[in-house]
Length: 86
Length: 210
Image (tube, rainbow over all chains, first blue to last red; front, side, top):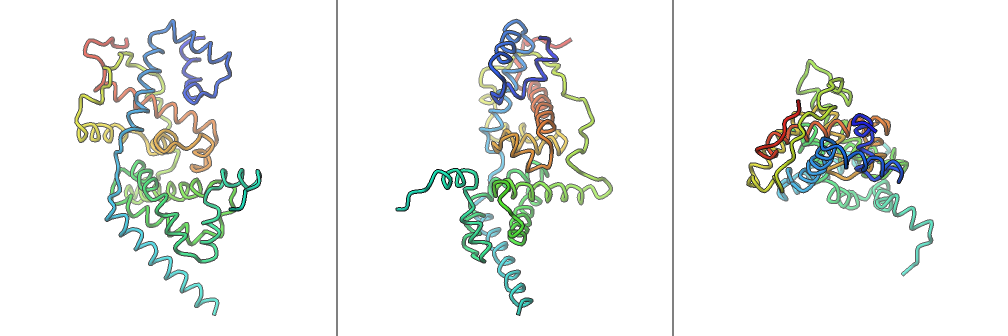
């Protein structure tokens, strides 16, 4: 297995979707290739860092405002639908 | 308490929101409010990841839920309610981007022709727990700037699959893409982010790619 073939299987490897034989081939390649070993480790860290960092919080006050605005629009649309039917 | 049959248990696992959706279809606004409380944060996060604009993301949350309410009868239960909702949010987000760059079309295929980041170039190892070298605000800023550099189509795939935790199949459904397309974009998004973060997180004496 070369590095290009290794990369082509990287997504499935991360998602643990590779068959056992392919997985051990990938791990054998990684064991002998420092570049691919580093690529896997740092890509895994990239995913974890993004996953653990709550970049975007929606403050409760804004949530409440948004809910009220949406519910008001929904109630209005419901009322209009009823009117059209009647 | 009534015991669920195996079939009902499986249906609940696949469609955890079906009971609430049925109530909304019957006109129950409090059931809809419950769905909103359940998913508004995720929808906001996805919208913000794609648009990179807080005001737009807040508007998208409103528009997404209102559209979902209006179209609730079109939801047939072929996917999870949340996946259906995400699809609306992604479309709304791309529409916002389109409006913002009025002259330019923005779609899931936007700017993805580039080969940048498809092949790793930086092979330096990272410091242990590199994120701990930054305070919370610095790290948030760095991560935000880094993800902003990705094309919207890549950002959406990465946000849904890796941050929001949708499966590859659900991500494909939500974005209207094939599974192989999601896998390919995910790989490139991950590699591009890794490459960019490497500038900040690599060990000082790290090896440079030639």
